[in-house]
Structures are given as structure tokens and as C-alpha cells.
Image 1 (cartoon, rainbow, N blue to C red):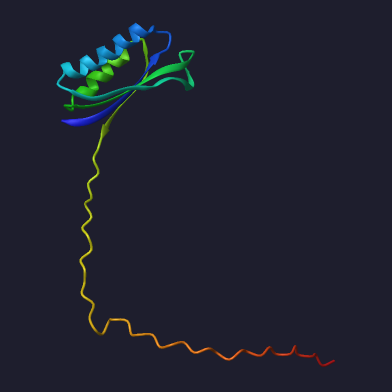
Image 2 (cartoon, rainbow, N blue to C red):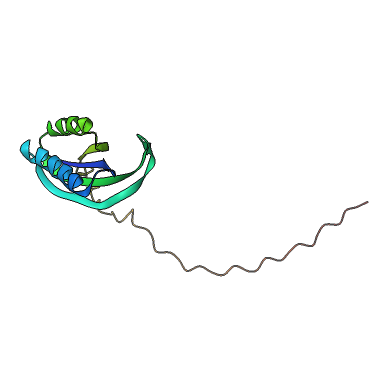
Length: 137
């Protein structure tokens, strides 16, 4: 099972009871198709949209994190596209980073390659400034 993150924007004209019902419907759709919901985050709440969608300037944002088989995102997108109350949606697969770089082996330092001890630096005598040269005319 893969991990996914989905965000969708609900029309603000929808009443609160209908909005909660829509969120439950989407969560039930995930569970019914073999998915496992990790988190439903409604704390983003009502926000102004970057641009008008169907002459609407505000939307209610919902973020859902879930585990599901690979076929589920297509089914979710199909259902969200049909629903008139969902303005926009995006489903993204979460990929865990793995480091494929091997650590550099530690090479022992040979006596020849070891840096020699630095000799103490002697102070140099101050340099006298030269007088400007006079042009012969």
C-alpha cells in the first residue's frame, strides 16, 4: 500500500452539515476501496482563492493523508470530479526518501602524506617605501 496526500476545496456556499457529510462521504469512499485514513485535517478552513473558480473567490480546504492501493487515487479523482461542490482537488503520492549514496571509505593516512609540522613564522622586516621618481625634463 502506498501513502497519499489529498487536498480538496469545497464550495463555501454549502452549509456546515452538508460540508461535514461530504467530508465523511470522501472518507468512506477511501475506506470502502481498501484504503486506511491516517488523518483528516480541516484546520485550514475557509480561505481566499488565488483566482476565481466558477466566479467563487473563497473555498473550504480539507487535507487528507491516507494509505491505499495504487488504483484508489483514480477512483477518488473520478468521484471528486463528478461532485459539483468540490471546486478543485489534488492527490499526491508521498515518497519516502532513501539515500542511495554510499559513505566514502576512510583511508588511513600514510606517514609520507601526513602534513609536516609548520615551522614558526618569523616576522619580516618592514619594507621601506620608495620615493617617487622624478621625471627628467
